Length: 348
Figure 1 (cartoon, rainbow, N blue to C red):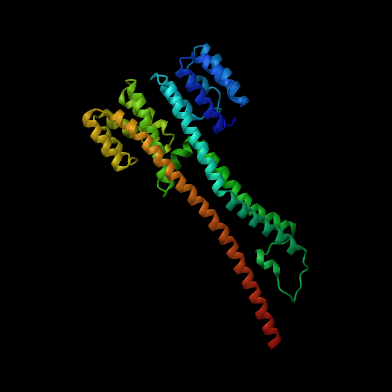
Figure 2 (figure 1 turned 180 degrees about the horizontal axis):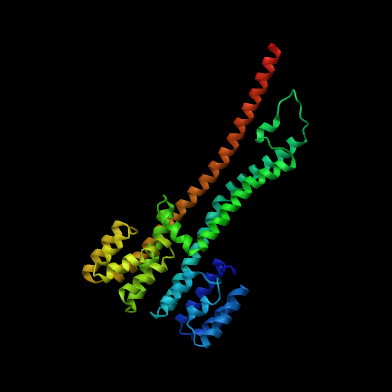
């Protein structure tokens, strides 16, 4: 399966295309020029193939979707939506901002947890080294059993078991996470759960609402019917919980309910947001209101993500501290046991 292009490549490609199209450069020429500004060979090849398909009469989004997983689903969906609104340069600018922000936040996240993670890995490797060393010590039937310090593990085999238990478990969790975020069915099941978690839920909800608001504004600007506009906007959230609400929201609109009412029935939008949508409905300015709210929710999402990063960093620190304290107490208990045995032996 082809991997998605890196965030940096996506950001540069979207920024270049946006600038060229905004300047009035023809679409195919824009893709040709933009391909020369990206260093990723896969992106250049994909742009060349997209140009070929555009020349054959295909839409940009269809040509991008034909590249497999090269481009993320959110990017393709937003471009597909923009093709009916005439707002492709604006959409690409927003996508460039989105990927640049994600890249910056990822770097901040990695930087904040790098040292705690190094300490955690070092602690695991040190224990593996102790297991190897204890395996070299001959058993003394009358002496202390040092292997008790590391759960009875010793030697090369014990070290392999220990490393498999720790790094193997972490690898399985990471693989499961990667599978989950790439599977639409898994996202539809897991995203409602993530939204209920402290800090993480607020972050995901804010990003989703920002995308929904911005997409609704663009689709309404093109005169798209409300139910189709809502379908496209909920899909643009790239969040399974919001996409699950599409049938409920669209059914309510078709029955003549107000937008604020059907959004409230989804239980996905905060009360202040719903109140502002209700006020805008009375004046007929809902798209404009949501367009103004979108950057506010993006900023709120960034603040939540920074708080989440800090929480993860402290969690790793706590895990390392717990690891160290556990083995200190284990060694202390082992040592006290030796002394007690020695006292009882002397008394006997």
